[in-house]
Length: 263
Ligand SMILES: NC(=O)c1ccc[n+]([C@@H]2O[C@H](COP(=O)([O-])OP(=O)(O)OC[C@H]3O[C@@H](n4cnc5c(N)ncnc54)[C@H](OP(=O)(O)O)[C@@H]3O)[C@@H](O)[C@H]2O)c1
Image 1 (cartoon, helix red, strand yellow):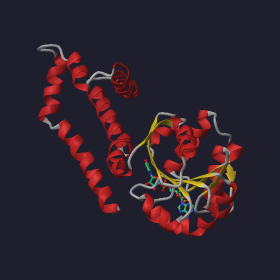
Image 2: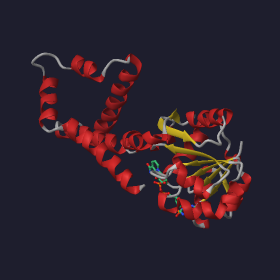
Image 3: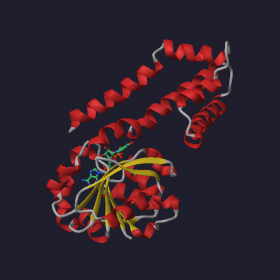
Image 4: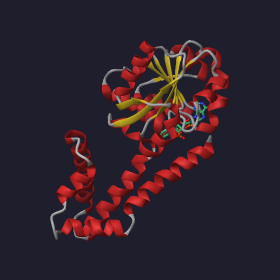
């Protein structure tokens, strides 16, 4: 299976690197193109993928093409290659660009809309996936199999894409803020900076794994950490006083509303 990448920036490169890391795809079967020769050459040298001189070359040589340009560039880029993408599978990762918008540029094309997050780079991503009506069941399986190499790929209704984007697409940014703050608190309490980051990240990882493996409610797991009159419940009291939960809920709502304005 030959894979093309049109637009290999932060997200496109994370997907490309994640696929290479999985060992399921060889760099000789990946064709890349950015806006300039220079940045395309850099990506090709860094990843071992094949340099393409233009967008048409990527489209012609690939069975599945990932589209990783900014949302406002999607229509302009697709206009140039639409003829070469007929009967191929195009996977767009552009936030807030709907299947109906993509179909306007790509009639007769099998279209997949995804919302990945940057941890795909290390095989721990979350990817929301939705298909247009031309993608048949065996092609859906093929795409989900490919994306599951990057973490967890979940087929969802397109109407839920914005909610998923505000949760898992943007979510790593919120979690990094939390980890940074967690480490800052530890530094304030005397821990060395590098130790604090390592332990903060592993604390988040361990807590997340507890939810996934025990399938317990997060509230129950929180209760298990809080002994009566103990130090943890003192800490939780301060988080509640500072509206921690409300801040998180409102940040997702702000992200969701912004996506709505971008449509
Ligand atoms: N960042 C995230 O966490 C994230 C998460 C989910 C979805 N997304 C989506 O992923 C897409 C890319 O976001 P990003 O953060 O990766 O942006 P980015 O880092 O700016 O990457 C965009 C890439 O598009 C390339 N490009 C621009 N014009 C092009 C053209 N005419 N032909 C071919 N390539 C072109 C750029 O190449 P040059 O460097 O040569 O200009 C750049 O490599 C967006 O649609 C975004 O909504 C991002």
